Length: 124
Image 1 (cartoon, rainbow, N blue to C red):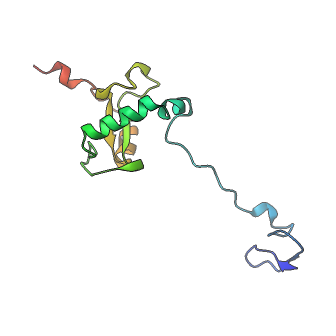
Image 2: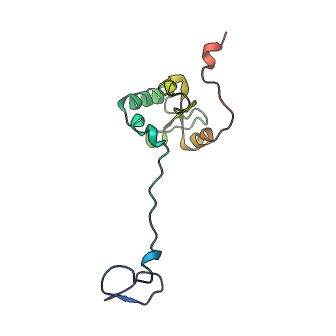
């Protein structure tokens, strides 16, 4: 016999970790939320996207375009200026993609004003 694992409980058990009184108070682990929309998950796992991601990373030389901090691995996040759900045709357009660190990516995702995507096309 052993005691219940609940802090301060003196109930004895034959098996398990918690007594009947404390079984329901056990904390449940929530699944981790993905930063990607579920409908776009197959796209983000595709070879085409992985190649484009590496092209953008090389183009920016591993630096966040907003704060200029060096990022690599999962910290290097590629942001769609125009989201895929707004215009799916721009999902692989290099001018629509930015390399960002996680902090700047959150800032960009929550920004309310729209950004110009193709400014280099209109310069004189």
